[in-house]
Length: 87
Image 1: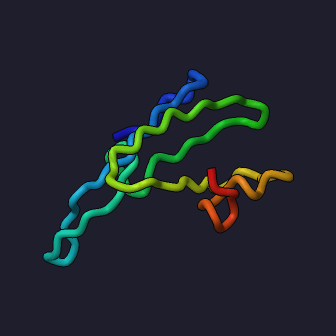
Image 2 (image 1 turned 180 degrees about the vertical axis):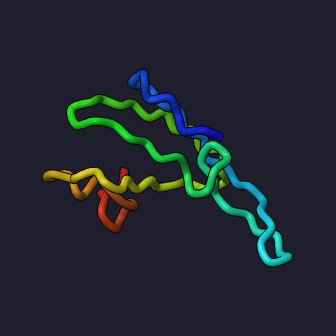
């Protein structure tokens, strides 16, 4: 699967459990758009990007963004009760 088209300001990511076989054993892992690791999103400074996230997994998920500076908003990058206030 290719990376999402970033020509527009909206990207849809779908998270789901996928069964993979490694070393003769089957394991369920979470994939993003059928990929593990998920697709790389590259944008330029000043660009706006809206992420439409569809969670098709059985459990709540937390996304972590690498390469995004959290200027005075570091509390918003992580799980509830650890780095976020619960909703």
